[in-house]
Length: 268
Image (cartoon, rainbow, N blue to C red):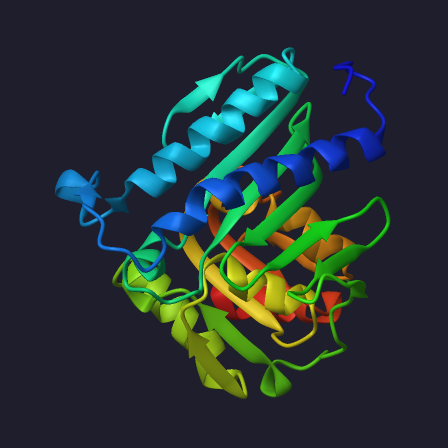
């Protein structure tokens, strides 16, 4: 790929897929193997990281430098490279490391691309199941383990009482206002499921989940997922309705008609 600030979308998407291929090859040999787990959380609480996380991010960053040397990289493990570049790749090599280290396949590699701070495209790759979700120019897609891609769309669900709600863990919500806000949505929703990390957003984009409510996210947790959800027909913002690219308190809905209703419950 010739690196230019006016790069064609197709070229950028091709690079994103190559990055996912590269990271998949690095990560998969580590899954369900005995690994040393480091804790980078310190006083903030347990925040695991493994050789797989770090090796995958290095592999992704190395390929970006080879193929698009004027692009920047924002990674969970190694921080920012060329932070003033027009294009910024936002990378979480293993979103869901807690699932990864417990052998549960509810994790994925997030590769997002921003142009001047705005989401351009996103990929969520799951090496173990062989699934890959991504945003095309006008829609979102899933390639399952059989290798056949198909377009995915969110489903209609305009009422909170009919909605399936997900969050990764109630432990990630601050006691008090955040937990109480989530419980208001949970009380009105039809069903609530926990776990999932990036998988929850992809299931929303594919029409199996209606609302995801999270807090404490970083840009690398959400940047890749925004275009996947929104080009499938959904909406992603912060709890106060602002752009979600920088993370924070996040709400994603499959049916845009749900958005204001969920925000009202969160902010009551």
